[in-house]
Figure 1: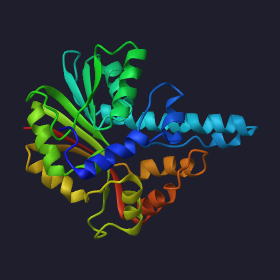
Figure 2 (figure 1 turned 90 degrees about the horizontal axis):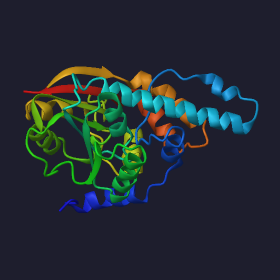
Figure 3 (figure 1 turned 60 degrees about the horizontal axis):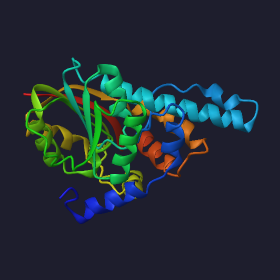
Length: 278
């Protein structure tokens, strides 16, 4: 079965029903639809537009630029990717990162999601862009995709690890990666130094029906599954401007305060981790 538990069914229901403007309106800017956040310095002049419509358009475009920068950073850590390689986008959402990966490397990309609505949307986007022969999305569980062992040169999770057990996830990825292949994740994790999840982190968990892991859990699970970290980048400071702009936008969802509080008080961190399969 693709959906293997009651919890996974709840997650699938959430994303099947999701029609959030913060995802859809940003995607309409370029036709690249994401389900993740942004990084980088904000061009605050977008708030200075002469009228409300112009200001709105400028803010949406700026938020989309920042989320594309996040995806480019992740893809830039996948290593030496050639056109003959195959990549896996685990928890692929509406497919933006997969389409960007194909454009960057020219290789085949498979995306998997337990949301049939996301899979259908993403496949339609690939067809519209004329890349459906290279970019394909599947209604599959990233813990048990059914793909052949060693088939992928690189695998990534972009803000999707908090929906699964990390030992199960990295065991699955280790099986699918070729020896010497690269795994990359960008994820929010709670800070072990702080202790248990803070009130703000718990608010984020409830909002997204997820279970944010402690930072240490990533490295323990990687070590147990033949994944050796090569790069760790703390992106917390780099993502705060995105949240500050989003908080002042028309696509704010109400969760912005929790993210900003958790980032600023040190209980929550936004990390990029790259690891090689040995």
